[in-house]
Amino acid sequence: MSFVRYKRTKSGTYAYRVTSYWDKKMKRTRQKTEYLGKVTEDGIKKVRLSPVPPRAALNYGDVSVLYEIITQQSLPEILRASHGVDTANVLIGLAIYRLLSNTSISAFKTWLESSYLSEITPLKNPSSQNLSRILEHVGRDEHALQRFFYEWCMSQGIENTLMYDITSLSSSSKLIELLEYGYNRDNDGLPQVNMGLIAGVESHLPLFYKLFPGSITDVSTLSNLISEVKSLGITETLFVLDRGFYSKTNIHRLLETGFDFVMPMPFSVKDAQRIISETNPIITSPEHAVSYGDKIIYTMSGWVAVGEHRVRYHIYFDEERQAREVNSFYQRLIAVEEKLNGRTIQKWENPDAIVADTAKNLRNCLTWEVKSNKIQLKRKKKAITRLLNRMGKTIILCSRNMSWEDTLSFNRGREVVERMFRTVKNDLSGLPLRVHKEHTLKGYLLVVFISLIIYFELTKRMKKTGLQKNSSMETLLMELGKLRMVQLILEFQRNVFSRDYSTPQTPRA
Image: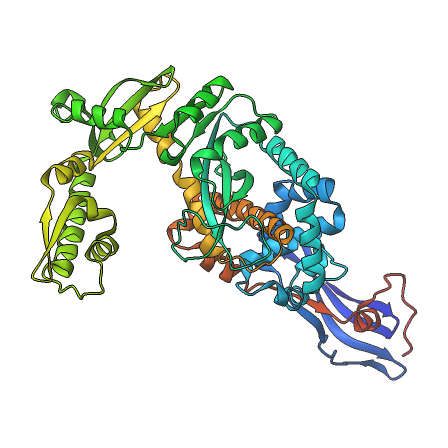
């Protein structure tokens, strides 16, 4: 059964044949519509409708997924509460831009014009000059930044275990006071600012960061950080730390304030050397063999005095790791010997400086003298033996009486923060810093921090769904970037596609 339906629009009346049929799958009656043409004085004439010209085609897939993650993490609300609506939109926009583009902030406006982000977070003035002014303002407002960290930590819940580590970010700017020469992890010869980052063990998300002058060592940053963490409402937790934070003062401060810790012990400490010496003859006994993951390791436990405190320790020995480290050590040592042995020394050259510069951290394993203007090397057997004895071994301190397995698992969890630092320096193009004012630097690092949240939340979801097995983060975002949102010209839409579903006039014969 079929009938003709008329639809009236501003551009005229159009006729359609409507045919009813039985849908076997849906098990109900449905209708199929066929366009007949436009109703004119001479009858119904088929008029071909012109295609609707697009106004714009916006990058949609990648932006919409990242913005959905931001929304689900309540970041828009938190940023608007701490920094205001307009600034929050800028921070969110730049964070997404950092994830999807490797170009500088000067290209942000052009990128935004072709992005769906312009529809969901409208920016009043996205020029690079205005964005720099906003970032500088964000960096000046310490109160707003602290409020953001507090609200962000509260939204994630107070986690029982936190990881803390520090890295250096380099810049050639002459106007940033925080930039100082210090231990440079990237060996780029530039002054640096140190960034301390706290992440949650359970959430695997960054929670808080703090900047320190570049000359400050890792060990001296912990005391200030403890005060910052307490101001965020965190009073009891377990810190997972790197061996660079080991000191009697830090351990006393942590225990005094009620914070527990897991921390590797540096081999340079006399007590660590004593533990290795005492356990070396017996650690490979059968009773000390345990299974961890897919490998067999050896472990022993005991107590050690650190200042006025008695702290639990676990020592671990991995034979596979020892074999790799011994092989790498001798390859490097032999390469140094081949380069230096028999080298002729000119009158103006300093042989001690030449050996130190070539051997680097292996120079303590060698002695040398100059005979007939040539360098002659000799290995220091005792120094090499002490070095070999510690290979494949790790000593980890813990303030709680934790099992060897829990202690090792917590310590290996520090890899999350290390991955975050690698992401800052590589995937987010965080180095070298291309800002020239200290407050702009602070504002820019908040953008990087928000990008980290999005990045690692998306990483978690990729792992959960199995996408990470067959696709990288970069590939996933590229695939999502193929999805476009096409916007049609509104005036054409009003003229052609606006419809009036009231009863149409009876067409003339």
